[in-house]
Length: 55
Ligand SMILES: [Zn+2]
Image 1 (cartoon, helix red, strand yellow):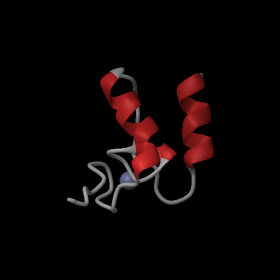
Image 2 (image 1 turned 135 degrees about the vertical axis):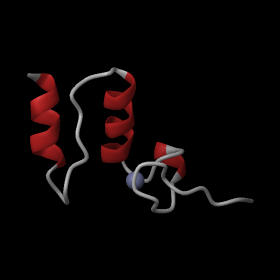
Image 3 (image 1 turned 180 degrees about the vertical axis):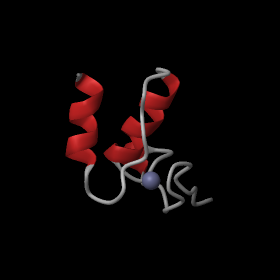
Image 4 (image 1 turned 45 degrees about the horizontal axis):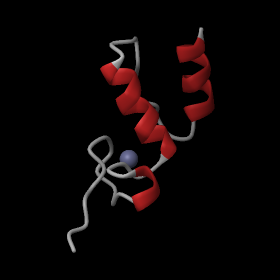
């Protein structure tokens, strides 16, 4: 069984968010595909980031 790494941040992916490592990275990728003005959050600012995308 191969362990995939998150394409966003490179951390090991987990099945729940496959192929990502977290909901944040999943949302980042989603924002990317939506062609929105997404940005990669620095650390734990996913809440602020999500708020921006809702605007
Ligand atoms: Zn990640």
